[in-house]
Image (cartoon, rainbow, N blue to C red):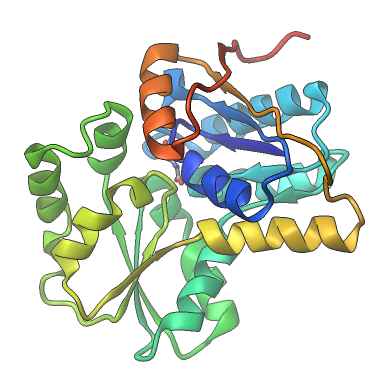
Length: 263
Ligand code: DGL
């Protein structure tokens, strides 16, 4: 299963897939050299996402998960149309998770500028429940915090509190972590919004989507030990320290990759 993201964020989705489907091998690409995608143009994000998908196509994956909301918002449909395997995104999964949980139907979406501008979450939530109200908030400082590996510092707690300040007068009972980097900051985000709010991500629902697809198509891996491989376009040591901390799988196979990829 191929999994792609602008950086380390998609590891939050990969972790859930590994938990649910422990015999599946994951090939993960993090475009850390060009992260963040959030402030980039749609055209650029689409081009970079295509480069990752093509690399994994050339490595022979059987399906692809775009574990990046910003990339899902701009590239899901074109990749679904043109890749020779199924392609799943994370936005519908995140919207579904929220609709299952919310009681008041007042839902905050924390995401990158790109995802917020795309309106993709409003569309996905409203397609499931027309009576819901979506309150989007771009949090441009969060991704650099995660990519720098500083996510457990006091500075992180302070920056998160500041980033969520615009929600002070809003009423809501559910927060969607609409960027796959944010579950790495989940504890601090939960502390900032208080105990009466459910904070959730798309990771679990996305893993269920992968499971459903593979089960339905009789393509589940069985009786094999996974041979995960991770590829980063930027620093391998920084990627390693975050990936090993987050996945808790011991030493990982990580390689540097250049995009566009040449076989
Ligand atoms: N992790 C990504 C997302 O889910 C993108 C973060 C970024 O590169 O700005 O949107």
